[in-house]
Image 1 (cartoon, rainbow, N blue to C red):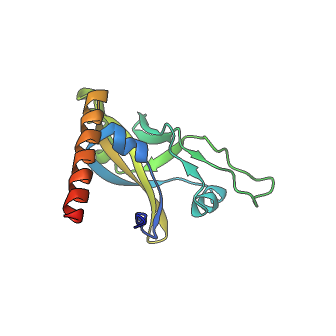
Image 2: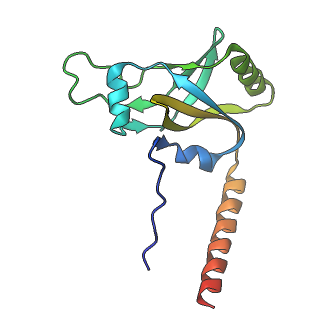
Image 3: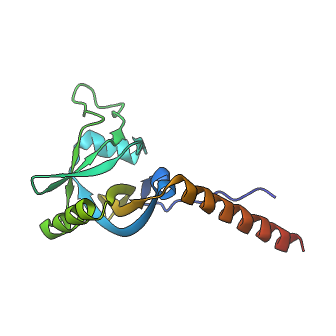
Length: 156
């Protein structure tokens, strides 16, 4: 029997799978992004990479760093810079809260997923605590055992 692929919702552009594996999420939040037109067209085509993305705070603003949005093929000479920092649209109180928690408690803020919400592109960000290698291995073992158990029960 072929395993059914998990479908993403029609509004989802991309998910940061590495963040889910390497971090435990404490709190999640939705943020808007300041983008240019060619970036939006590239995102509609799904051309994004979350490789080393993180959120940086400076001067009371939140910035998305390390996200690669590929250049749009049909843009001509007016092209965007693929790896530029992008400003996040959050309330000042939300920025202050995230910044203090990330500085005091040793947490980090990471991008989780990018999606459309009522015609606008939104970014889900998470205040996260890093997992160490031991915790990740335990999680993999636990999932393997659960999968094997489900297989055994299905064949029984």
